[in-house]
Image (cartoon, rainbow, N blue to C red; front, side, top):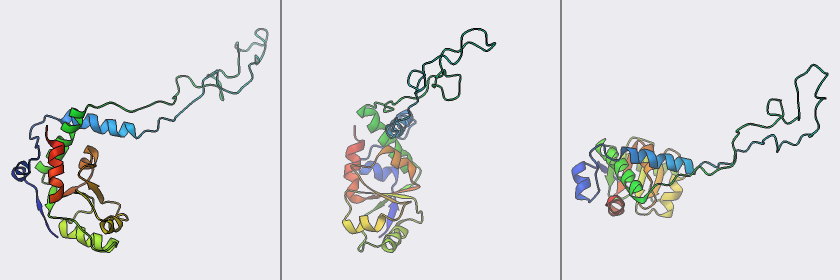
Length: 203
């Protein structure tokens, strides 16, 4: 099992949309920010002075004590009181249009191709569901360990062999996203995945 570096010319011949200019950089930023924001749970919650479970009685009388006036124990200026402008449950997700997502995907893939970080292999199959076999197959393709492997599909043996290798990730061409294209040091694409990637990058 061997792989070759995917050149710009070969990528264009495979109908991949290669963005060679600076166009699309903002789209990549917007999409990655939106993806990370969507993963936020948004469950942080604090209590206001009205929600703190404390007595509503006046701590001491208004006059004659020499102390500052105090009307309630849940005042935000006191320890144990309410929180002013604290976080409340909210939705952090951001909307990104389909065109921006497509442009960001094309730009991310193009930047990795231009940098020489994308390799093309005929296939990537591990005969036995063993981690040692997967590592051997990976070493035959690239010396890097942090690798994203993209194929049209993976058999069960390959999936089982790869699941304990945390630096590497198997993704199908239909599921891989922009953030994943930027995260790994090397990207290995099988011939069977090229057509699907071309369809995703085309306008």
